[in-house]
Image (cartoon, rainbow, N blue to C red):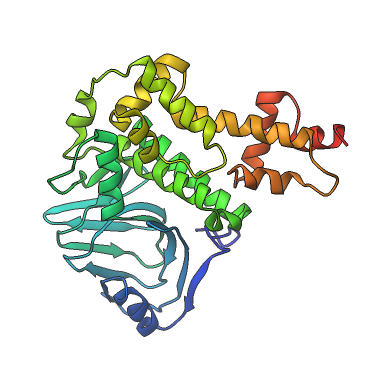
Length: 325
């Protein structure tokens, strides 16, 4: 990483240390064992943003490092190399990470990662129970066999590009608005979106079952979901809530909701919240700000909120607020 560039998630420092022992101590708390294959100088720089069920971390150790994971570690990890060489092994599969290829590690198997001197990366780590619950909601049935992802991830695949674009967008939002982590509405939606994007982007042992879903949704079920969304617009609405209301699997709900209304249920919900934010901006009291109103309706990335708002309404949020004062 060039020296002039700011490391991702710099607003969320975890460790700044030249002590290998401190690195070992921190990683051991995450069921990871660190060792140095060479004699390079440790210069650890670690940042991390923690959600209830996942965390995103930037890390660089200075010296080359080997990290072994306990077999009982109940987490999925997606690598995103930032600079330098990174290699990952899970079971007998070994992946040399590059601009075109990276790795996804599933729990309950021996795992090892190696980083070269000066290498840095971003990891997305997701709790196994939360990921399994999200898959269950999408399938509309219990997940019996453990979810296992293919280890090698092809970064040129369009769905994988979309996944990383969203992950990068989340990191940008965290840098711009640390309040994202304090709002249940935003953290819940962000977690679900990241997990769903990964389940759609990377092959796994339930991929065929997701593709075979072909259950239709009756108009009355769409109406139930619409009624629920309109009645609970200010609440933290999750895919699980909508699945429970509709009575069909989440994957099916998204597809057939789009057939009826031209977008998925969460996209429809976002449109309503943009309209609610606009309505509030047009009637805001003198002390109100765009930031307060955007955060109220679940928009943590103010820059993205402003861009989408202008595209939808032909003016910026601040222009709406100013015009109506």
